Image (tube, rainbow, N blue to C red; front, side, top):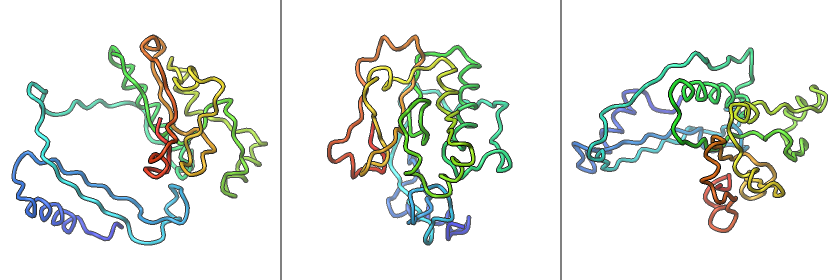
Length: 219
């Protein structure tokens, strides 16, 4: 429940267009978040109130010669249900998405490309203190005998990609989360091994205004 019905949300989109006199060539972006939370976590139980709804509009004509429409590809991977993975754990929620992405890439002749973003998990062998986790997650670590299996990043590495930051900066920790108190590396740049000759540097930006721009430091 975001506080707006489908009809009310459609009305807000039209109201924004009317207020800006937009009738053609406008690109609408709709962002809905869980609003103010009591903790930096995906778990909806941490939401303190109504969702935050942001709508922006800008003129964005397609470049000349650009193909019309989008190409859709289907994959055999399905998102795991709650009986398999706890979707409130970010590292679990990413795994199915990564496997689906790798399958889609593998179905065509791959051109040079990158996998980059906030993966919300730690790479195998990384320095990580489980005592910084919320109590409920510390309990899961304890039940597993203290072993944490970071399958998401390992799945990417097994597919022939290189962790660019770790490859170029083997002696640096490179923590990106949280921005105000970096203690874990959650943000990554991966390249196919054959593309590494084109990379010159990769670093974490911790200087202002980066710590105030997001809850993660940029890579």
